[in-house]
Image (cartoon, rainbow, N blue to C red; front, side):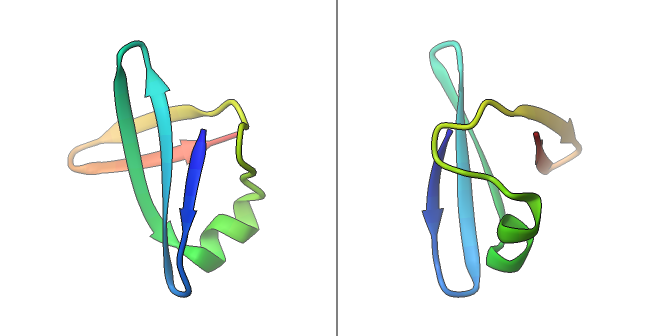
Length: 54
């Protein structure tokens, strides 16, 4: 998992096979979730939203 952290919004990027899934969330939510570079995550996909969980 890779993280592109901004002041207000951040991207969490995970690889699934040859593909990438990107989730955009507030930086506060990123911190609350405790995501770190290199973590293994599960992507839950609902409609147009992607939620990363640890």
